[in-house]
Image (tube, rainbow, N blue to C red; front, top):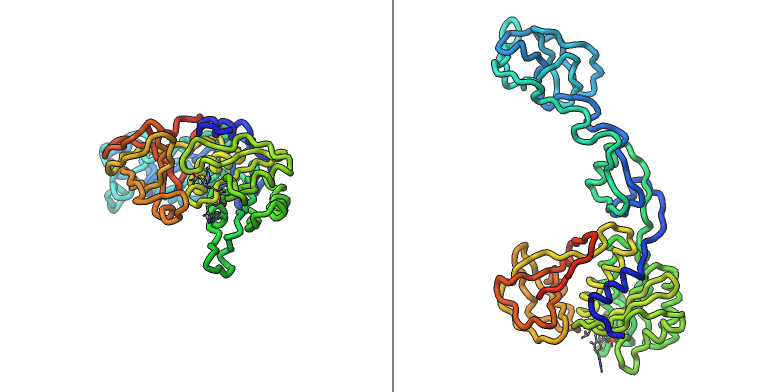
Length: 405
Ligand SMILES: Nc1nc2c(c(=O)[nH]1)N[C@H]1C(S)=C(S)[C@@H](COP(=O)(O)OP(=O)(O)OC[C@H]3O[C@@H](n4cnc5c(N)ncnc54)[C@H](O)[C@@H]3O)O[C@H]1N2
Ligand code: MOO
């Protein structure tokens, strides 16, 4: 079944569901996806406090000399009340005393022998941070599907929250197949090469917050691929590379077939990556990427990343693009949707000088790619392109078109 990119993504999202829950101490929750809404249990600030080192005073004392009869530090439990014709010295963050109408910063007063001289232009409630002005008790702080990053940690710790319910991280199993492949810690002879796809996918899936099992490299035999599949089956998501084309040693799909593989698509109208295959064995989703390294890496960014987002429980599970402009003119061969890697500098997108499906050199230079429609024959300088970043990620709650026209 050959499908369009849109159909492939639809099949991925309808057949991939989020995982079960667990409770984590928040120190271990960085990068996890929340499985519960979080409400504020405290006002922030918890009490009215001074935003400046200064003096708590009354408006009626504008332009007067007043006596300073106390000093309050942050953390003090001061219960006195400010009286007219007096000032109380107060430090930033300290709770303001009863009767305070405004705060005068230290640099705005003049020391006199008999007290301090206040400015003549005092206004109500200056430099006072009110209880709850930042966060109100009872307000919803975080939602199911939010990803916990450093600044969500700020919110959680501000409420004294110690444990949260999160979705379990997707467990990914990886292996490649190919008699020509050796691991980077093995010796290669002149008819062999290193397996770069699995280490690439290992790094990328870790970057995307998965727990990853590296199953290794299978020989091009049904028996050895079976052994590797068996070792991978307890994971949520198996990613393979190689052996999905029509060659005499391309056994990947046949090998998965023995385990009741329900193939949902086995060709995509895209270049490179046409033989990309997706399916399920029970509840385990499987993505068979082509062996060609650039084809494998780019198709992982489109389909593999979508699967991981869908498994993760994230609210924003659809890939989003960034609007950029072409740096220079580029001619394409029309006919099939193309994935084209390049470098986005924050404004312009520069296409890699060469990017054949079997190459690896474009990957390290590129930080994004575009998916260009089959009808497009030329991209002019300054023309708009939708880039999909591979070095940082943007995602959204509703799907949208990823195609550059
Ligand atoms: N007659 C046809 N031949 C091919 C077709 C086709 O339609 N008809 N499709 C081509 C396309 S497109 C692709 S992509 C490749 C995909 O083939 P496989 O998925 O079966 O991949 P392999 O044959 O195993 O390997 C292809 C290529 O990539 C190298 N490779 C494989 N795995 C790795 C790895 N883990 N790390 C580094 N390099 C790897 C491998 O050595 C080969 O050079 O088929 C075309 N052929
Ligand atoms: O489309 Mo293949 O996937 O050329 O590399």
